Image (cartoon, rainbow over all chains, first blue to last red; front, side):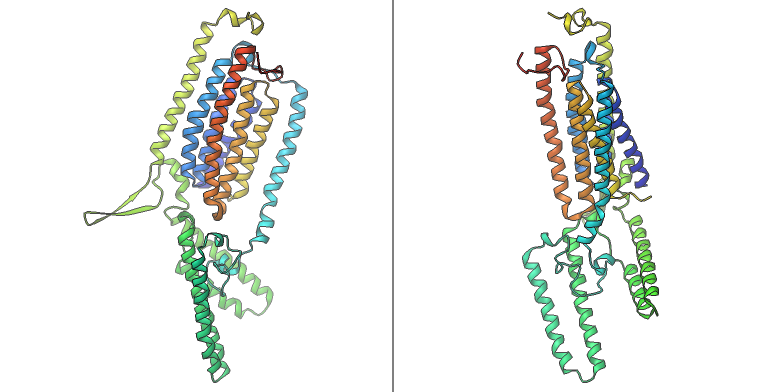
Length: 338
Length: 103
């Protein structure tokens, strides 16, 4: 759903942007710009930036564009409506534009690789479950959220870790056989993993945007646990890699299922079509729990479209009227004026 | 085909290039202004896309986009005032013939 909407809006926006450049008529260019700006606000809505999209519509489409159209109407007279650009100029700018576009597209494509290397998150972070101690949490300096973490939390986390380690250290030293020692070490790692997991959940809950908070459901944990055993039992490295790939696929399936059923993540694009989206708010009114949703988007769109129609109508009316009663001073072009 | 960060970046790049070409080829001063608006929109799409795909920059991306929008509004108002003044003085909006601002 979101993808179809993206392609539709992206097509509208890019066609309008290209038409803005290609058209020679300044009034048409302003109208195409209107569609490009509206499409951009649609992209903002798709990306979950409701407020920015709304302000884009209000300030840009409703305010700035009105100014531009005003300027067009006040100056677009006689020879200034269609101003031809020479062919040579067009050729040069096409070459420059193609080069610039290539550079930007290459930059966008190469973006992923260095970012992956720099922010290679640990297995645990990627899978969303604790496999090892300390990684992918606030203890990991590569964690993208680490710069937002308050110092007290980092210190508290460190103290808790040390506490667990100390308590197990004594037990491990006192252990009689190697088997119990190994068991204790495993138990300690699990305790540390639990700490890391709690911390990660806390961090996500506190600092991550709610709509992108991937729920670490029991299903997800189950998949990882099942495959962990299988991978450990696998005879060869190849089989292990294959199993790991399979596990990642299974995890992605779980994530997709979660996302599809989540009230916010996937549904956000559908807000454009009037489906109520947004985090549900639970309110208690007179002792009765009520679930309310914030769905202001659709009425807002209706108002905006209304505004756009009025804008186009006003521009059309102003042009049509002027054509009939064209001033004789302007009819001959700028030279005819005193 | 899943839509990822790159697709939004491509769209932003396209808007940016269109705006740059609009600034370069249009002889009408208001056409140049329209080009500037397109460039700013391409930049805004980039900012919002990054703020969506990198949770660490969620707030920064949106705030900067708001700044861009408001600055564009201010810039459009001032530039239009200049263009209209220029039109009053020289009865033309052709940027190729604009050599002096004072009439």
